[in-house]
Image 1 (spheres, one colour):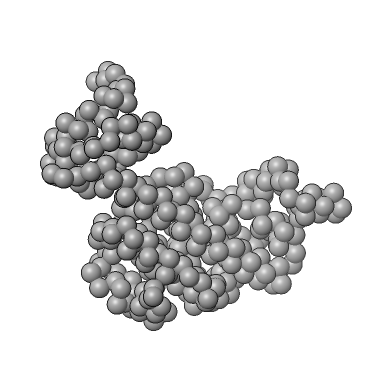
Image 2 (cartoon, rainbow, N blue to C red; image 1 turned 180 degrees about the horizontal axis):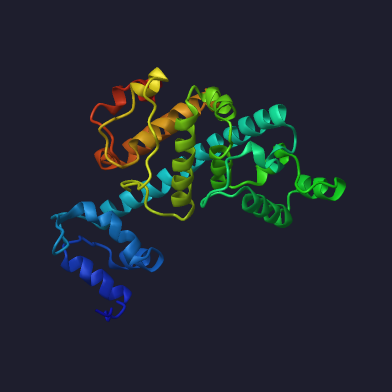
Length: 303
């Protein structure tokens, strides 16, 4: 079957929403939002207000502001998640590079014996070539200085790690050959290396969703992080082991890592305030009913 539906004008888009039951007291204001927010982009945010998914009929009384409230929450939520991921990523970069440099030398990344044997998804030579490309493209002063001053294939690991993407960092850590090297980094966060490996992979996918402005609030993730089984106690008491594939456990792991990386952060309070300000139904994000009373979330309640 070929797709043969014509594109709808802004007025036609709005008329369709009104026919489906959306309350629009200010037509020009509604057209303004449709002009700047793709109809299909907003579509994900009026789904929770549908009374009948087959006909897309909206519940009586549903307003454009109801939809926009959820949209704005999700946008601010993504920014908050990115803020935490940035700090977690910088910490992991620092710990991995510090351990590898002090254990195996400044150019440990050039030694193929320190990394897992070649396989289809990760080959040491290909990953080095990718990093060489990052170095060539980099406008960082310290990278340009090191490349111009020293006759080495690549800068030392503590410099190189600063121009790795989160995805690259996740892969280099996961493919570090010796378990003791991976555990030396994971112990900084009281995790087992297998848990940290999985969490990094998962967070790199979450980061990509945020970077591409994709919906995050009620997303179901294909790849879920491996959950710890015996420690840390605060994490075990806060996770939801019967949760859906949504973001609650991700946020719990991020909150714990934020407590390790920056004990005086206000990320917890900012997230709770954001949820309360927009009156979001957090069950759609996989939150258990008693989440506010679970250890990590109850530690510092917003005043």
